[in-house]
Structure formats: C-alpha cells, structure tokens
Amino acid sequence: MEGIRVEPILEGRFALDGGAMFGIIPKPLWNRTNPADSSNRIDLSARCMLIRHPTAGNILVDAGIGTKWDDKGRAIYKIRHQEDDGTTLGIEGSLKAAGLTPDDIDHVILTHLHLDHAGGLTRWADERCEDVVPVFAGKPHYVMQEHWAWANSPSVRDRGSFIPRDFRFLEATPDAAPLHLLAGQTELFPGVTLIPRYGHTQAMSCVKVDAEDATYIYLADLIPTSGHLKIPYVMGYDLQPLITCREKQEILSEAARHNWRLFFEHDPTTAWCHIEPYKRGYRQAK
Ligand SMILES: [Zn+2]
Image 1 (cartoon, rainbow, N blue to C red):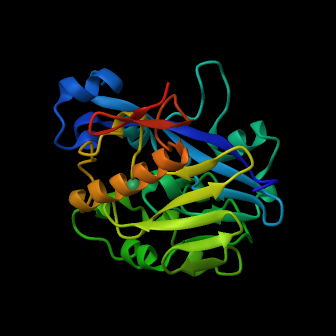
Image 2 (image 1 turned 90 degrees about the horizontal axis):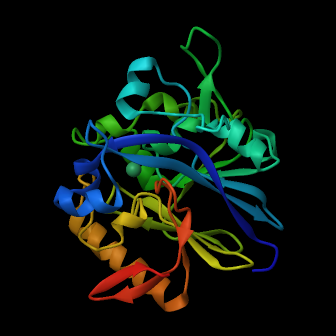
C-alpha cells in the first residue's frame, strides 16, 4: 500500500539459553547458526518494528526488553543497551536514530506481554527504582484481549516470562496509557493486520504489513530467528509446540507463495529475509 514504510528499531540485545530456544533440537545442529557462549546462551536482539503510516501516523510494534533491570538481571540475560561502537540503544536511543522521540509514536501494538517485548513500555520514575512511568504516555496501546487475560493470570509454567510492572500500568492508569483489547484477526489500520497465534502463548499476534516495497510479516516469537525456519525448530518455552508447528507451516507457506518478507524480532543480525522452498520446508532465499 502506497505510503506505508517499515523500519527496524533495535531496542536492545540480550541472550537466552540455546537449549531453551531450540526445544528438542540437538545442540550440534542449532549451534551452527546460533553459536552458544560459555554459559550456553545465544545472542538475541529485541528488534521492534516501526510502521510509518500515511493515515495512522507512526506505529510501534513491541517495545523491547527495557531498562528496568538490576545488575543481577542484566547479567543473567546479558542485557545490553549499548553497541560495541558506542551507539546507544534503549527505546529512546533507537527511536532517536530514526529521527523520532517517544512523543512521535501515535500507536503501540503489543504482540504479547513477555518481558522482552513489553519491558520498554515503561521506565523507572526516579532513582529509587520503585515506580514506573509510561514511555508512550497518552498513546493507545493494543493487545489481544485473550492474551491480556492470560498475562494477568499466567500458568505456573510461564509465569516467569511476565513481569506485571511492565504492563499493569495500562489498566491502572487508563488516561495515561489507553488500553485497547482486540478479538481475533484484526485489520487495525489499512494494511496493518494482527493475526493471533496460540502455540507460543495464548493469542500472541503476528503483524502483517502491506508496505510500499513489500509485504512484511512481523513474527514475534513464532519464528524468533532465521535459525528457526525449520518447522520442528520450536522453542522450549512454547506452551503448545504442536500448534506452533502448524502455525509456522501456515505462515511460511503463505510467505513463500506471496514473497513476503519475514521480519525477525530476535535474530541478532538479520532483520528480515525472503524464503524459498527447500527439501520438505523452507530456507532463507539467497
Ligand atoms: Zn514470548
């Protein structure tokens, strides 16, 4: 669609256990594409998607891992908000590189509320690190209603992936951060469609954007890196791995058929790629 442009916004970098990121896949296979460090962690990015839309304005999809981390948390997840060349990340720093401030964001879409997706919605109010303030104050925030319910009452297995202070402000301060709950597949703005998926967590959204130069599919945690293109390469975190397999197959076959660009939230180097059929699945197109 004319006038719609998509840009990657690299909010931060972190690392998670490679075994957890690849579920049943043996390390000698995943370690080739996603090499582990001495603590068996693989490098990941928190890459948000900025949509510059001719009528809706600037739309941000996900907000990254955020800066509300103490030294222990930063060490466990290897969280970094500065590049080796000195470039400052964090949501403010990354938006600045795109010529924007948080005030320039008109809408915030949340694929889901796991800590590495919703952390950047807030920052500490002051040095006491007790209260949070919304980064995108006054701007509408969108999430699937089913996911909102789940995030506020998660299972014992995935409770650790949600930090309530990342998103409770949406309900506690509706004037400061209006919350819009969505039901089912939704074309939120012309050319911007949320597609709920159920394998990773309850009603996570993938976001399809019919942009000027290509159709993009923001995969969130359905296919976190380009190393996860093969159908059984499913994260150990997923609540329903067989559903993830089916949902991956659906999206990958559509993407291959229509030459969509896959947008990776967590690939440390590849923001997006095209795919082509390969053997019984798909691979990154050359
Ligand atoms: Zn997730």
